[in-house]
Image (cartoon, rainbow over the protein chains, first blue to last red):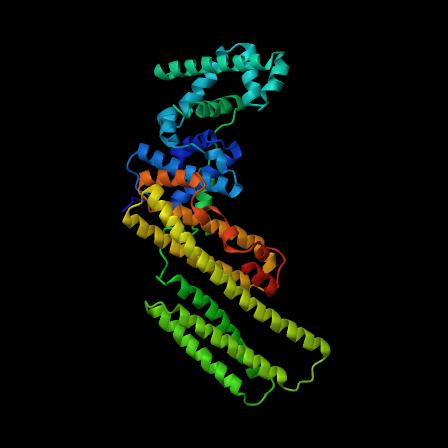
Length: 169
Length: 296
């Protein structure tokens, strides 16, 4: 028999992780927000036994993924979800035990170590969602040049983040 | 990690865009507390009583015919006396017999669907005879009244026929879909016997709700206006049934189920409303002949 579900604590503890997980599955911020809400409402409809934080988080990700599947099915966009087997476990490893908060904070700090052009390129890519040819035009680079620039910048950030996480920053 | 790039892209997007995870506590609690929020029926809920789908569909159709028949008798009761009619006596007798048969079927485990349909047909034919008897009695009607009455009668008969045909179609289709889905679950998801039993219960409940939805649709006066809403409802029922089937599976098989569905399997569970109605039902259509032509 399940214990009473403290939905408020559950939402507080896991909403960021589920939102980020859905963003990683390709949702827009708005869609991720709606589906995160639907995930917790689903859990309220079908309470479950909470054995540990890790198993609770895993179950919520499964529910969230399934809500996304149902949404994509309605939209006729199932192709976007091909080859996602094992993604929940890999996300658990990537997000660690803070729902990815530590990684994002470390990333924001590491961004300060990028060169101006690297920062601009990634800003145009991830904040403005510009296509590569537009970024190349804005920076006066070739398409190949901007591709290399962004790959180097991303690698730099990744290494910086992993260092910070290892050192507990 | 296979999905590494995807995760990093999401992290970069969050860091550069300044978006932060929303605080949903208040909204989840508010929606969860409202009657229509978290209280939607779940696929795992077992039906209150285990009735076969055919019996249930027969009950819906019989209740429609019974209500038409009872309404008819009540209208006649308040109408100017038309004299004693053997057709009316026969109708009353058939109605009583059908009511008794519906009660018996609900209590028993026997598959009496064929007999129930026969009762429904008999009552329907009795209604036709009453119709004919009344229409032969001399009445001072204007031409407009005659035209309106005939149109109403035709529409009522057409509506009844559409309902019956549609429910038959849904039941037959659902039967085939259930077997196909269960076969897929056995072969590709590897469900156990117990899980199969539980999944079949979910699929049966789904079929019941499908026929309910279709019956309610046909009974509405202006059903064409409600077509988009019914289509949405049928798609929702499919999604809930899929969730219900998934919920009876052990965790590893839930992942296999997700992948099986993601690869485009799952038949009617993944197909929304299309398997349950001809497109014409949800467009502007009232012609029984056109419906029957589609059926062929």
